[in-house]
Image (cartoon, rainbow, N blue to C red; front, side, top):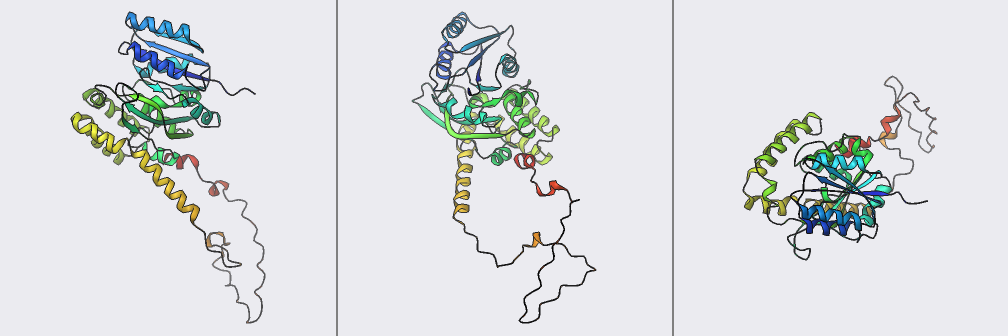
Length: 353
């Protein structure tokens, strides 16, 4: 039986540079140990002649089938990605930015996790300036589903340029939509709230180009407006509580307004390493649990939660006479009318709480 096929989804717009797009495309198609079966390449609005020639070159020379989608006007990342999803032939879709570089084993690592049952798989990334040998930062996301869900109430829990997901899980929550600069966070929040099976690979699998202006773009009034709209949407959907909303507006809104000289070190020292700290904490918890050996129970002991309830009107049990064995307990009929779900953990609440 053939492994489930998958699609690579990329968007390009007038602000991208042809040399960056060429490197990104080759790293995600030609140089992968597991190549995509289809590439959906979306041109979001008009581009310069040099970029148009680059796109024709990539389509003609691709070892994988390329579906080229051309949008007449620039519509923004969210609508462009939704257009690309409509052109995707396969349910597994891998995202790739037009100026990043994928490590050769990226899809070999992530796609099998989606094939095995995950709906959304992210990964870590390495930030570089002009060349991938010039690493200037690292982003490690939380990998435990409970940590991801908890973290998502304050921060985007996935590095968008690294994600692989099921298109059906994305479509089930309405796709990306049009929330400029925040479309990925809003999508992931809705997927988590909808019970999507989520996981992050802590290992970096993408080189993320920061270059000039990367941290400047994380601030400003436009991003603040999108931030406030995102928080209102998450509050309206019940994804965050009113106190969390107030906290996010103060913390995240303030972050958008501070000078770049403050924003850049804060992001690198506090936000980006969070996943690494939480993953180390999880590892310590697992090591501690593995080393713990519970004391043996007293023979015949029945835990309190497993003891049958006794009616207040029934007489207290008689103690056995000295030297006589205690009377054998009478069998207790199970209460078949009790709700079965009382003994079953609600997985959705756990993953989104």
